[in-house]
View 1 (cartoon, helix red, strand yellow):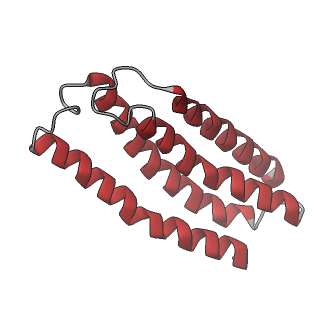
View 2 (view 1 turned 90 degrees about the vertical axis):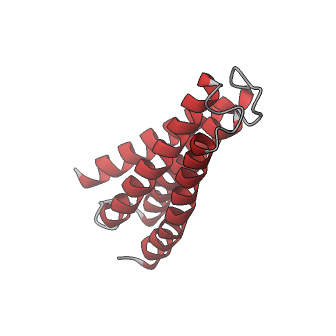
Length: 134
């Protein structure tokens, strides 16, 4: 693996305990019946989606690091693909969590746009990588 992919993979691996901590936090909200989670279906659904997306997208980004170095792309396009793919597990969960940060929020605020931005980032990064691999 290239040094860039190795260091990016290292950072991604460091985020895994943060995702695990998020899962423990969600479990604590359920076990302790903390107000604003179980009684708020919008918040509960978005936070669950944020946690799930974080875990899955970190794993996808880790796998993508292996393929980025094999892609027939210039170094600049490899870096762009790397950045776009790694941005998704940051932006999407942030959008899910921050759009209903207050326990009283019953609809997402404008930060929900981060989910769309993360999705576009993921789509562009994986499309670029896929083209480079074909």
